[in-house]
Length: 345
Image (cartoon, rainbow, N blue to C red; front, side):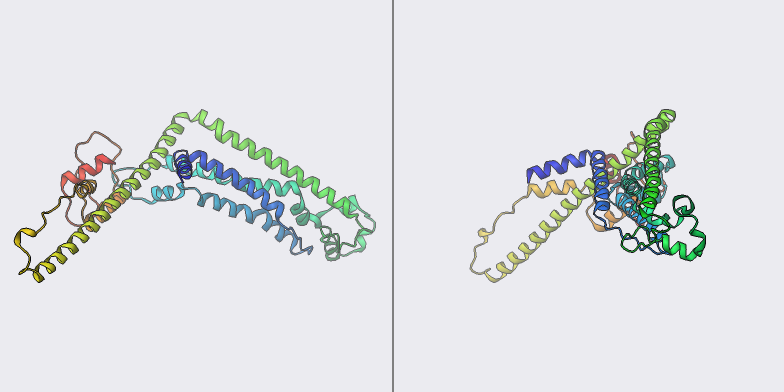
């Protein structure tokens, strides 16, 4: 259990490396999925292109969405994009940096799928078998004797060796080699273009916009760290609130039971037999962790205020600025409690 806890803490502290590892695993999984996928071309003129387009585009879209879903920063980006400005303006450059960072990792698995599909050639063969130049690769003198629908129906069976019967017009091996050669050329071209694009995005772009890149990267990390610290503070407060609430419940029940027992045995028990009150130091420590937020309404107003009007990015203020700093309804809490809240965050 300790080993798993250490691994979990390491992954939390190295989230970028963890996400890179997840993207690498998804890329390998996409290649393995394609190798295990049973490709069955329908060998019909009206369905070959649609089937091939679905195999080429649908799995990459699913892998891209899975890459975004598995990224923890998606919810943070949506929250930062939709939150009210309040006293903290939203920077579009930071939002673009966050989205680009997530999209770059999520695109790895789809790119691997498309590259493997093109290099394999089955999908391209199924899609473009009806476009093979029969007059160049086959017996062109017999081609004019067939109507266009019959010729398309015959060429559509090229990916299916068990039902293809047009060797008298075009040798199947010739058509397969021709289309796979084109598919592999497109696959390597796709790999080269994506590699160059990744190199430009990751290496060349920061050199021309270094200041803007550093600012966007810094505030993106700040938003992530701020959210984690706020969640940890809320978790600590919730634990302390629940513990104090349960302790008060048990103390109240114990008091009621003692009152009932005293009323029943008042005549027989001496007055000096009552137990002295016991002070609970742990309960006082838990109340200190509550930071003055001791009821549900105040906590709800605090969470609403955090969502609608986050504190400004300006340290050194002894008290929060007046105005719409308290976004929640109802009476404002004590100034001391609100100052403690802003200074802790």
